Image (cartoon, rainbow, N blue to C red; front, top):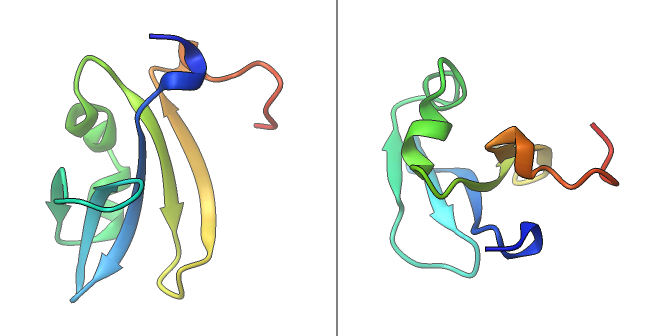
Length: 81
């Protein structure tokens, strides 16, 4: 799988839960009680599994706060951050 072919996900808040959803829609890969739970201690990395992926983390208002790539070695070198 090439770097550009990483699966893409969004961490979004819906119904007072934080959902890790595939880009383009579909069933949540994992549901967290809080954003802090989802972003702490490798929880996103564990949820994505061995294939990894790119996660856009949203604020409650829907705006993108940050993007993380797992594993880090697959992060495109030309991206900021």
